[in-house]
Length: 121
Image (cartoon, rainbow, N blue to C red; front, side, top):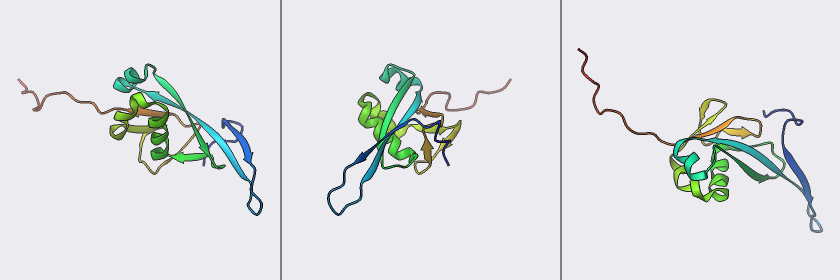
């Protein structure tokens, strides 16, 4: 369950329904996302804000959030298939839900280091 309604940042509007249909509530959720290393360089900032239109739910999945990141920030899109997502300091799978009050970080892959452990003397 996501945080209390008073902590969520979203706007509501009601889409008028056609005759015989129900009106739909549309809201915009706003997520703050921390970026590191090559993602930070590509975006030109250590943090981005992603807005997601949703039909009343207070949370979306990590995969949905990454799709929105790619759409709204094309400069980082090529790295997104390879990033690890951390939600509240824990790695998250694509199906995990995230809320607007979660701490979300995108961590690009890292490389380097020796192919063998150094010999001890």
